[in-house]
Length: 73
Image (cartoon, rainbow, N blue to C red; front, side, top):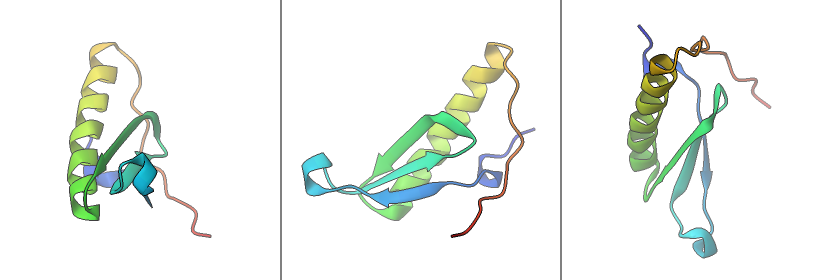
């Protein structure tokens, strides 16, 4: 079973021109992004988006990648 909390994510602030708030993305799933007004909201929305992405990939018979570790700069 895949746990969304096991997957690393990246969070970036969005400019006011792009609506403000924060964008969350998952390096293991290029098709999965979300956002939120706050960092916490972005993480919560990201978990929902990742769960949905994993379910969709499973339903289509695609392989689900194992979580990888992010390299810190």
